Length: 231
Image (cartoon, rainbow, N blue to C red):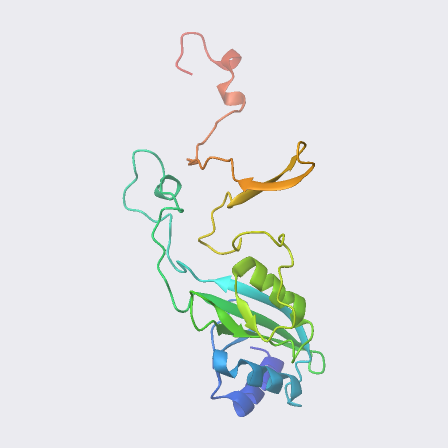
């Protein structure tokens, strides 16, 4: 950890030590977890404390921790019809509800101290994930939170205009959830008879893709094989 990061970490410990839990980071960036009930107050302190001064919210992103840590390709035996991950249908697999399934991650920048930290908060429940909006702390959170709502279905309490921002208003579901079907729920096409765009159930049939190795190079050219040989 650099001297500047140690200085920021010490200031966070002084002002917010009992409200923030430092968590490991593979990239060496200061990363903390905050309880949902303390989110707004902690964010305000991170912005206003002179030793911290995280004036800029660079990004907000949602995370779906469904099946986090499970290795899908790890297996002790192979099936007769291909790899287990390809054979099993995710749409019919049971979904395990996890209270710590959805999280929101905030990337903060202190221009005054030239420092960055990441802040993570878990939604209180997985069925209807909701956290407080931080638009009152950083106005740049407005569109970022709308994106997390659109793609993950995470609700932001007291957001001034929580609408979809990337998908269509009539879109069903949230595409970045790990239990969202890869083929989607509906498809859009232009109907020449009605003279407008219509929605209809997806016409794509789900199919299982089993990995195959296709060898196609000069070693397998028929003209290079020796007469009477086996290749």
